[in-house]
Image (tube, rainbow, N blue to C red; front, side, top):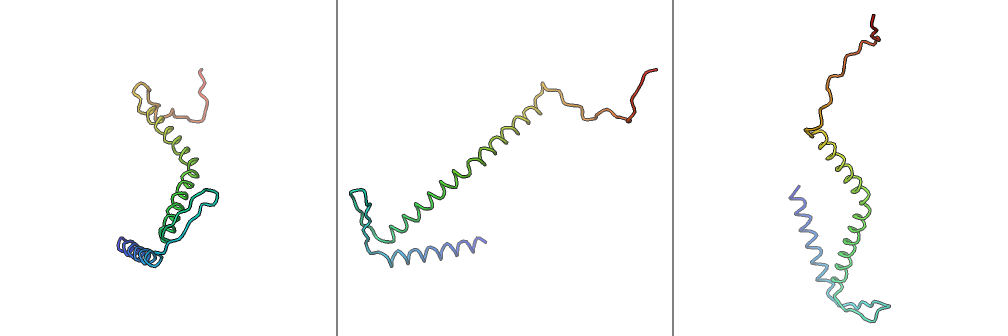
Length: 109
């Protein structure tokens, strides 16, 4: 499996280097309402846009997962409290053998 991932990584690197070499021409990027423009190679602009998309997607996924993290944190705290209560030496253990019941009521004569 490691070999497959390494081969795919090598293939991706070759494709990206080839893309970068084929798209070295400068492009002008104008930030319309702002008073400045940037000129950069096309491959750099596309790679930065890809990186920005990955970062924004990761932040969005992290924000979307916050309720699940909050629930898990609460469950961990409840479990830790239950373990502390179970292991507390001042807390007598509950009887593990409940009294036997025959199903009939006992009456005194």
